[in-house]
Image 1: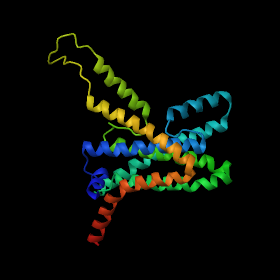
Image 2: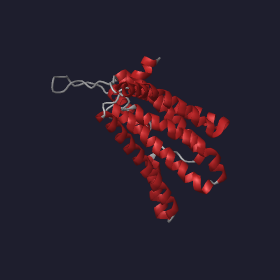
Image 3: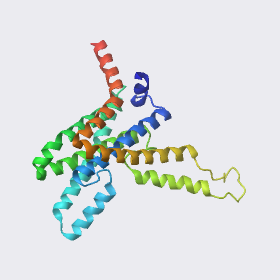
Image 4: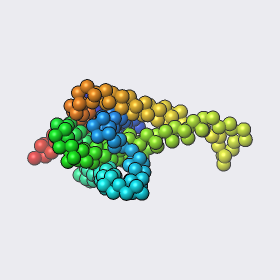
Length: 250
């Protein structure tokens, strides 16, 4: 088990490790997005929708909602930037946990989201915007992690991109190679492995959303603690490896 978790988030990457980590994180993103909607009535991974809502509210004169949308937008960017900072710092320090560090931060922030639950019910006007910002930051943080370690081949919160790539591969699959092929014009071939990965990720986002919504409806904000525990488990082995190496040097 330790070996599997070590390879899952370690510095040395493989396509299998990238895929498996993407499976876990896509499920987590779907659950957090759906659970967040149950809490704040807003999806926090959908930046296209947030920017569109900002434009609509600007035209309608709802400037308070424009500011709220801008805060969510900047939080998503801030999460992605924070992930890049942690990964690059870990890389320059030659840490095994360069990808695990932002995952550890994500686990802590998911636990903080669970902790905001009671406060949200008491002071809705104050903690509702803070919760939206926190969830958007988490989504940006997580999406940047898998984007960096997979060299932009995989996303976990950007379902629009996943579905677009699925459509491209299906189009290749349906293409009729009637013209003769040669070295300059090879036949059009679909990448069946990539299509399977994309379909799996979309399915995991959906199933995570279903389970997240059900869990939130039953347990409330406590459900976020289970997501935090899952992400913590994904990150902790490479972090412990670096801690042991540090203590040996001391």
